[in-house]
Amino acid sequence: MLFIFDFDSTLVNLDIPWGEVRKEIIAYGESEGFDIDPENHLVTISNHISDTPERKAEVDRIFRKYEKKAVEEGKFTVYAPTVPILSTLRNMGHKVAIASNNTEHTIKEILEAGEIPADAIRGRTSVERPKPFGDMINSLMEEFSSPKGETFMIGDNFWDEGAGAAAGIKTFIIKPGTLDISLFEGIL
Image 1: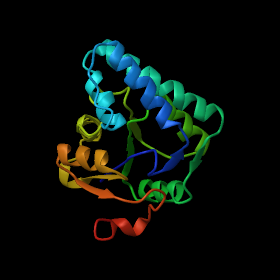
Image 2 (image 1 turned 135 degrees about the vertical axis):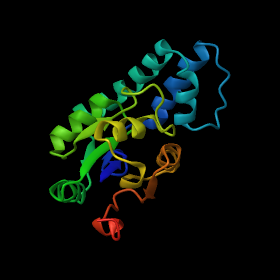
Image 3 (image 1 turned 60 degrees about the vertical axis):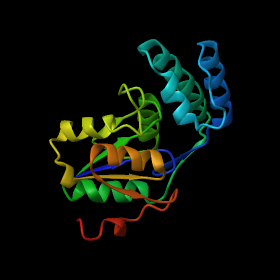
Image 4 (image 1 turned 120 degrees about the horizontal axis):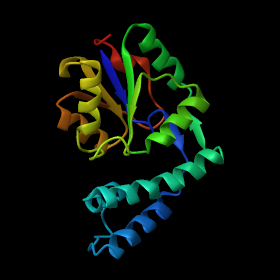
């Protein structure tokens, strides 16, 4: 089986000033001629203005700038159950992957620093369309030749739920920091 986890607020807490990221993304979008609804979520805004490879690269660069600073300053916490649960799943012969709207560089840095086991990762910089699109999940299922019925998404918000639905797989939504192996009773 393939277990795909969201990253921030599911496996780790990454302390990023999302309000500042949002302001910079909005300013960039407006400078590119977009009429941005300030009520929209950062993910919606980011996905909307990432309509060309060049614009997506700039949006990804803005995300990475803030994420990199947080990593360099040690402003992240690996939730206590993360390493034991991911290790248990892998020891049982399952594949463990991460699908996150964080950048791939940031995910790699925190995985290494936190000694978090994972067989593969997909970040916003790995795919054309980040969550809630199913691109990350589909890519991971293809990499591991994992059928939909044996692939599961675990996350903390409606972007994760949307990505799981878009890929046609069962999705578990948890509160931040509450991952528990009992979540998979009846599956394992």
